[in-house]
Length: 210
Length: 146
Image (cartoon, rainbow over all chains, first blue to last red; front, top):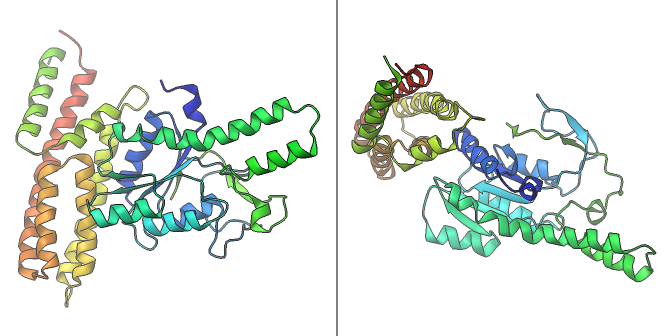
């Protein structure tokens, strides 16, 4: 049984191989993480709320909600783990887009690859990937994920503590809250230049978007 | 047949699959990921592997029969096939895929056609053995101790 804290962590796994998707999902769930799997980089970005033109859609999402419920909810992703070799958008392209996004750049990204190419590995690490796993990924590899997720989670925790301690919020305190808010990895409508009311529907705890 | 004997047979067959190089470490991980909450995990993954492999084999056949041969496409299909066989620990199949990809990068059509026969052969052998093995595992699971 994993620690209760771990089930608060939500991992987005990206892989075009159905076998590897099923495998990574099982590995992550065994490590007590919540998991969403998608089969492409573009679907990953849609899930994260990012589009080609970097705006959050106000309309129905283009990813068809086949057999899952969509509801209005902000989805927090604590880590993205992606395959490197994928048709269309590679894992590296996805990594770049995430790191270039003001709202997503703090989400830790891990790359997986079946090929041990040193230049590939260093390129990914230089672009901001936290880890590079060689496939087949082992359960023991996943133990390296928690510290990266804890780092971002603790910033949220700090924010909560500030809220608790603040009975009579002073202007100074509110300023501090805003600063910490901008540090967490939730998508910020404000930063995207859209109205604060998020009306974009989000998937409801589904494990697979294919 | 009584459970102990069946379990013994299962253990023997399993050991020989590893000793003879048909299966490798990743398969052990599949087994470890199977538990009471996911009692059919190994079978599910293996079944996915069969379906996925059938698709890829068909695509590769088609690509090999096309003129001119698109080696990039071939390599892409084989990369996928190698990936999934490696993920489940299908050692011999994975090795044959590697040989194929070498001929592919050399754009050696003859070599590709020959080594693809090897890939298909190893895949067929593994599939047969896995089907027998997993059926034995199921039988042992439902049998009773004499």
